Image (tube, rainbow, N blue to C red):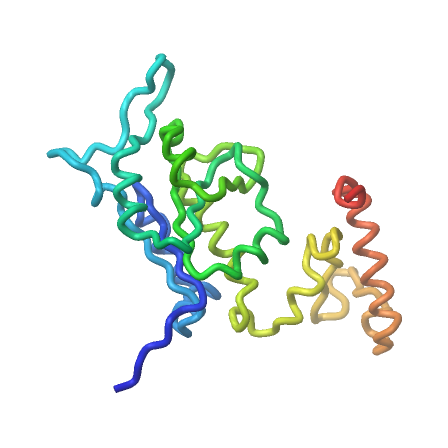
Length: 231
């Protein structure tokens, strides 16, 4: 009997809308990573851990205010059921630390990540204080469905797991590597509707091509994201 190898990294995503994630993990690079046993992604319905006839997972906020807040009981029960001592529990929140390439590389070293997908007005603060290892934001905006941000996290982190990408060198010149944005890319045909590919890319001179690409990275970063250069 052939023993199935354990994945390098397992994601368990707790969500009120688990089907949101299912389509995403069934396509492209993430699907191949799952098929190849590199990662495992489980989309779990939080209502499994809710009590009562209606499996309620949210209630009105104390102190008043609009919207609903996710209750602590189902989240505590779920995390305590699936997390291990070495697991990292991440809450996707717009007021968390920013998701960056260095953070993705760090998380790619983990073995098990539990992701809490927030919805409505977020989760009870006691969940954040007692269960959560890290709070992560995918940007300075608010989503109606936290499972979308969980999908972004899974994609961004998984790319840094060895074997996930067909060509590992493709990571080297991507945006945000070395605090620079990516250089422009071209492919065939060499001329399209009067627009020509820069001559240097057709020259075969790899030294000149490398210099051109680096200059374009710097130029683009200065124009679009000068804040990166300050770092």
